[in-house]
Image 1 (tube, rainbow, N blue to C red):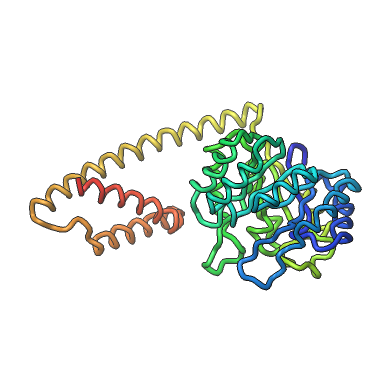
Image 2: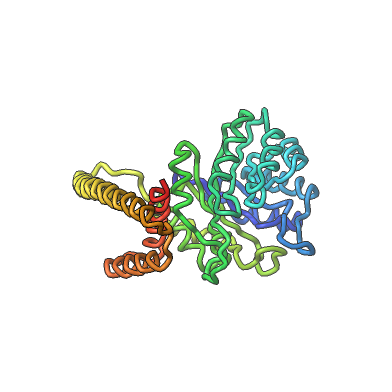
Length: 341
């Protein structure tokens, strides 16, 4: 647990008793912030949308009684102003807000001049530019105490999880903003408590800096997202079970093995680049010949044959269809562009 930033608490603040009891029940679990949603933007009207401003004094009382820092989600200027006045230690911008640059700009401007920590969840859409843009809008207002929360993306494929993890998105954001803490929200990725340990460990294996995990004193009676909220006992067990990876090792054997394998990867990368250059040169020549004979550039039947052959070859080498398809589609896009020159 050392060095990890753990944020936990109920999905929604529902009553003063529920907030206070949950905070007191988890205060010794090693968490840094106690969370609870006050304003809950729901997909459709008629659902519980939070207690709003009435929950602010509950959070203040819970923070004082437990000794934990307090945080909540904000989506409007008046949310920010009320929370800053109440002394909240951290605020986060939710996925439904990150997707809207106008809202993010309004929040950034209302946060100007404060030193409160601000975390940004990835947007609902798979658009990392929106996620990065939210960070940049905050920074444009002089806000530097910023963090990132990876909560996955809506998955309509019928998979086990509520949201697809798409860890590559978190990795890309880490590369874009290596100086910012990046934590995972396994509750929203999982959608069910039984998957939270697995997802949390995957986040640790990737070297993420912490977790935002939902916990309720009585999940079965929760007014929102009851299936994905841990009990205090489950939270304690989860945090004790995590295997937190080291960033590096001084062990000579480890360093020799890693250095050797990285050398193999470096050589493979050069070979891949050389093969791609050769392939693109062939694509240019195909484009020239097609133009000479008045043949259309895009030929779907041929492309289907290429894709099928590549997917089958990849499967024989233990590579997933999704991985091969994504790579080949990018290569095909560049090939078509070159043939159009």
